[in-house]
Length: 183
View (cartoon, rainbow, N blue to C red):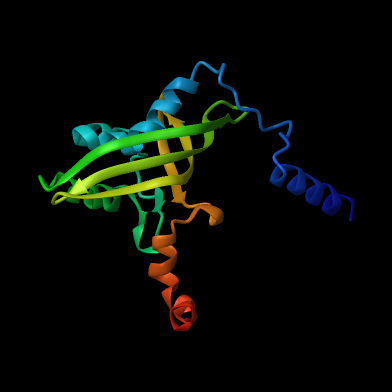
């Protein structure tokens, strides 16, 4: 019972945003800027279409996991990830703006794992039509393998209170049908 109570208290403290002793963002860590660059390059590579950079920042195995905003955008394994990236080679695709904010990077005590979260915007054009993911949340895990930081897991989503109205109406439009019927 005592362990359960401690676990609940730690969960509540973490959910409330209180820093836990083992969770220290360490911007003074000499690896901080390197890890941050890997994270920003996970979208930023598209502006220059630097596929070598994209490939170099992901773990070179089939255990990587990436989820970008929608369930249909879940990718497991490096081969699947790189195959998916091929669509961005199209001359019809152009990345125009990627911005990151509110970084939190936490290093493991051993120094070979880093967890992160941040907010981001990712905008571009496809066949001249603009698109933009704004105010989304990105979380993930990096490992230091053979002296190099690589991504092993990334998840992007919208916080529930920041989902764009257009997406809510697209996926849940039937819930708004009563609004159309009212005078």
